[in-house]
Length: 475
Ligand SMILES: Cc1ncc(COP(=O)(O)O)c(C=O)c1O
Image (cartoon, rainbow, N blue to C red; front, side, top):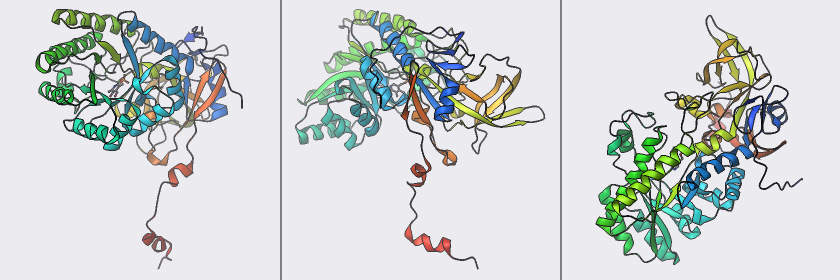
């Protein structure tokens, strides 16, 4: 086995005849390439459906995001939202870049720790944290963002039992009054951004946070570290994020006045958009080249935080952010192979072995992932087809796509699918989960093995009492 040591790798963006990203584009032979690898060669070697991640693209995007905020603010920590792609290799790359992480649940926490992430850079979020989850966080030194009134008591009991100290934050139910009339992307039901935010299960009210702070201050082994909020992907307007960031400072002054505690850190969560010239994003709001970049978010949010802190006489808190999709999304593509092509009276369907099991957001959120033929990627798009998966539902992975004529055996890639694809993939129709490969330069290595039938069948059990009956001869 060859061990490659190329850290940090070259991060000079590649020049393709068409660039879809800094490390993804149409290569010298006219095919789609990820970094220095021809995607056709990857599909032939590793099989389809296949997730492909560009290591250099991930690092590049992370650095751009980090630098945008660090150039505007004195103390910034980026916590990669592990849920967006919780592969171990991805986590290792994030560690090497110096990113912390946002974890949900024991397993995501376990994976981050297994990858060697510094626990002091990890936060545990969740609306229903179990005792074993809290215990694991406390024993390993993670910061826990409280999101239920009885969580502090459970944390306190665990700390006493093990003689441990713990850092805590509190997840807020921000008022967001200035967004009461702002319409966004209906990710959390209909209504304005405020209505959507108010209607989610997340966060504690003002009075509840005062109560939690009051109780925590009496516990010598509990250290209050941050307040937390996650606007989610409800808007792609950075001004909405700036409102949210400002509201965090307003809440800090409320806690100072009512509870005698000034949060030393505000964690303003994820939900950061990215756009592409060819489009990507939720059906209702496809983000193109005009979508904000990290620099836009950084400018507006940091100004808002500094301005509000100065007005209210508060010291500047440390700033934490939890980007997920904006980092992992553009780093990945998903590749499927064409099977049956069916011509209807006024419609053509191109079946792929890539389905909404693998790109779940394409199904449940009508998410637009741009599709590109892998071979001869720039061929004239002379047809409009529905790209569908093979599942027992309509399984539209890309409706009404302009494509060159496709036939059995051809390959189609969906761009910007590095986030919330592998981590959200499902097994409907007992479909096996795809493999993932990580590309760096002209090398590709498997980072997630392709699932096998034994992985599905092996989990099933038949109660012994049913065994004989199903083998009984038919009368
Ligand atoms: C608490 C928290 N932080 C960060 C994220 C990442 O969001 P995104 O991938 O949209 O940046 C999420 C997503 O659900 C989240 O729940």
